[in-house]
Image (cartoon, rainbow, N blue to C red; front, side):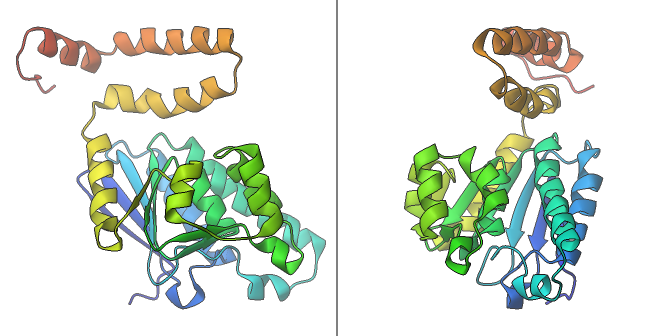
Amino acid sequence: MSNQLLLRETNQGVARLTLNRPTKFNALSEELLAELKQALGDIKDDEEIATVILAANGKAFCAGHDLRQMRASHDDGYYQNLFSNCSEVMQLIGKLPQPVIAEVQGIATAAGCQLVATCDLAVAAQSARFAVSGINLGLFCSTPSVALSRNISRKRAFEMLLTGDFIDADKAAEYGLINYAVDDSALRETTEKLALNIASKPLAARKVGKAMFYQQLSKDLSNAYAYSGNVMAGNMMDPETVEHIDAFLEKRPVRKS
């Protein structure tokens, strides 16, 4: 096993980032957060990458922040900076033009559950479990609550935050935290199939789709339609879109530029 904290590989337009602190349950240390930030920043402007899979080695997807590292300091400024850096990484996932898919095995707790909620899509093994369990240690999962409450219903999110109880993969799918719960043996295959499906779509649509989707959610209905209409009009003018539509209408293969 490599001693790198974050592994990266790219295949057929899909970048796979793998958290690699298996003996620490892939806890988000300062160093791992820094490597994630660097890797996501590199991917952001790489048009050769269409989709990103965020995975993990070992028995856990991510157990949240590295509590031992956190307790080595008892300084408000240190904690403010740590949570700011973590929030920056979470927001960077949202700013990527490429969809990010979480591939979840084992546990995803606290900031690990936040990471799942932050990703655009998520596939989990049937054996996976999810919790925002800081409350059991007297620490309310405040920053994880931001992502969690934007993915599942308010009452479901608040119950998870107040109890710290685990939910299984089927329940996570029912809540809307993940897209699919699959057999453990099919986890990687299912995630990669989804990633490759997305990567196969025309760039013209992919490059506007993610930003448009999240932007319209923050607007009222009238402004959302006005904004999305403008985006779609611009999309219709893209030469790649024109070629795909013409090929469909003329029942011919798409001509590669």
